Structures are given as C-alpha cells and as structure tokens.
Image (cartoon, rainbow, N blue to C red; front, top):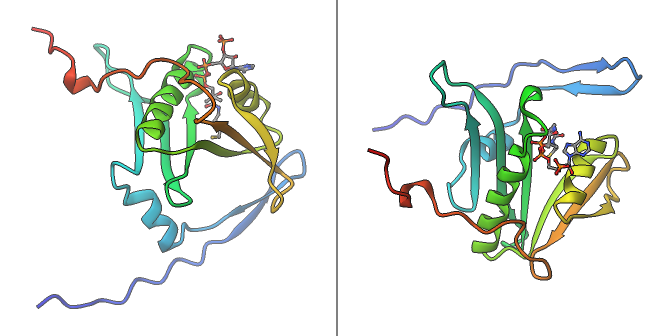
Length: 169
Ligand SMILES: CC(C)(COP(=O)(O)OP(=O)(O)OC[C@H]1O[C@@H](n2cnc3c(N)ncnc32)[C@H](O)[C@@H]1OP(=O)(O)O)[C@@H](O)C(=O)NCCC(=O)NCCS
C-alpha cells in the first residue's frame, strides 16, 4: 500500500530586492502548481527545448526555449533565452522558428509571450520575427507580443525532426 504523505511545507524564503535602478524584485519559492507547470511538461502541448554545445569539449547548455498551449489550444505561450556569449548569431531565431512550427502543427492560432516593456532587445527580436505588440491591462510593466499564425506565414520552413534525418556513419 502506498502511504499518502502530506506535501512538505515550502521554506519561508521571501525577499524583496531593490535593483540599482530602484525596481523592486520579489524572490520566493516556486509554488507547487507552478512547479507542476515547469516540471511536468507533456512533451506535446508543453515542451522545453535546450540548445547545447556539442563540439569536442564539455557540452554546455547555451539556450532554452519553452512553450505551452493555453486558452483551449488557441494560443501558444512561449519563453526564450540565449546565453550572452551566443546572442546575435541567429540561435534565438532558429529556436523561435522551431516553436512556431510546433505551434502551427498543434493548431494554435496565435503565438504569444509577455515581455518586460524595458526589454528592447526582445521587442526588436520579436518585430523582426513578425510579432505585433499590445498592452497587458493587468500589468503596465509588460507588453504582450503576438504573432497571428492564421494570417502570417512561417518564419522559415519547418525542418524535419532530427530522428528523421540520415545518421552520419
Ligand atoms: C531576445 C533573444 C532571445 C534573442 O536571441 P538571439 O539569438 O540573440 O537572436 P538572433 O541572433 O536570432 O536575432 C534575430 C533578429 O533579432 C534582432 N535582434 C536580436 N538581438 C538584437 C539586439 N540586441 N538589438 C536589436 N535587434 C536584435 C535582429 O533583427 C536579429 O536579426 P539580424 O541578426 O538579421 O539583424 C536574446 O537576446 C535573449 O535571450 N535575451 C534574454 C532573454 C529574454 O529577454 N527573453 C525574452 C523573454 S521570452
């Protein structure tokens, strides 16, 4: 018989930090429902991708992208991050193209992300990729970037999954 144990209490670590610009930042434990979202990706409607170096040296993760279908599958929310030393090399655009292809294949109508208003790099990146910007009524610090998948064409042709490619001898 499997004993049902009570969920462990979360450590009471909650701190407010003040950044040099004066902005306040809350540091807190991830709550169980959020953890569930982060850890239990179903691999289809929710997926995280990492990009890692694969040369002769030690492999390092240099970028991460994740998406989740929301709003009954009509929207695909995503987040993307590329390590500083690997930016402006086209990696972000490649990962976004992967997400966009997945979102289209899953039947999503819109690709969306909430981005800090101050994040000009992401906004420039998103504009280049065909996104438009709208406000987020619930949080003035954010803007929502939106790409209408019904009225736009794919940023680049969807590539076959690596398992479908010939394996090098
Ligand atoms: C935004 C981010 C993902 C871009 O990744 P990247 O790999 O550097 O982007 P790419 O090299 O694919 O750039 C594609 C296009 O975006 C635009 N772009 C990218 N970085 C830019 C910058 N610093 N300033 C202006 N435009 C930029 C350019 O138009 C570029 O096309 P071009 O090279 O032909 O001019 C990366 O800067 C990042 O990880 N930022 C921190 C994480 C973040 O803010 N994520 C957003 C929350 S979802």
